[in-house]
Length: 505
Ligand code: SF4
Image 1: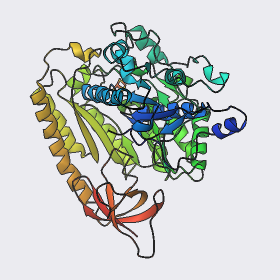
Image 2: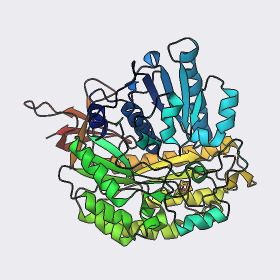
Image 3: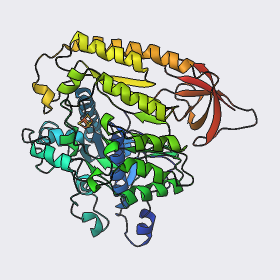
Image 4: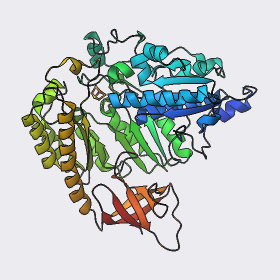
């Protein structure tokens, strides 16, 4: 596997300060170290990779896409579920091969796997030279052996404010990592800001902005709070400043991310912080689309829905991971809610935002999930008719409360249920996509399709980056040459189970 194609070949922006700092006399090392990155997992992890690449580039390192050329290889790992952990380990081992028989001198492992298995990585994979946890991004400079460019980057970690809810959960032991071998005592508390250099790994026209980090919720299947720390928000002005800069660099679509963006600003005492932030972002002239991922069900306020409905720039798109619909399963998950509550909430969302695209995800096979509880979930899915839906098979996480629950289902039964739920959604999706035939939408052209040279690919406001189905373009006016990163008007001409075919008008 090559080093993931993280660095845009045309990336002009090393962050606002980099070129300036270089010209102000921070000389690069005699021969710049070449660093290659592999970023696994979610967009939140991708932003961490972008920040580490920015820090390294500012310190004089050269970034390379090819593992064969790299002096140092960094693998930014994911530890969300067992399969993600396995993929992370496989990738580390594969990259270790470049040390044994190739040019690489150093292998650095970063990210969530480090928070979970810090000692074990060091012990079991001797090729790993250094580890960098999710709260230690600035340590990437020391870990790779590349000196920080100025004392400014040696700044001690700032302790960010927390929410009373998070403090209460901390007192109850929610974030405890005592039983994890080698986990450092301090929870991750790092959060980048608009002054942190960042190299975008996404196409020129789109970028993620992490507006908050960590999570205070008590979901029993999840160890993200232990991996990422208590919930903390970035300053309002910092997010706006970063968005403005990104737009100046050519970004036209911004996706706000965080474990739970709907809590944004609560640690500053802001009420409806996400709604205020979205509204403020709509004033950035050349920014065309704004979205946010993910919404916690009971944090969706009327003000947030009205803000989405009022502004054309805010995509009428919500991703609300509900995890289940049976009140009894949700209680065991320590999430609360249930089909009735969710139905009322979804009715309100759809009434306030008439053209809403609604995505959700569920966990099937949670310990003790009965056939009846699973049927409740299926009935709920049939009733709501989500536009997009994902289903995850429950997998045990050592360190999560659910690990100690009894009545575990067999992997085979869990998979049977997952497939059944996805089959229901396939039919729903197929029906919903058919209703789009003949309709016109704005389309952001992404470029040539990965499926065929003869097709182009794009996204409408209904399609979040890298998550939802595809829109293939097979026709455009003869006199035009559609350009990636540009917006066009399109008409849907074919509908498949998940994907669409459209022509540019
Ligand atoms: S909301 Fe629940 S599932 Fe999501 S990150 Fe927080 S604890 Fe995990």
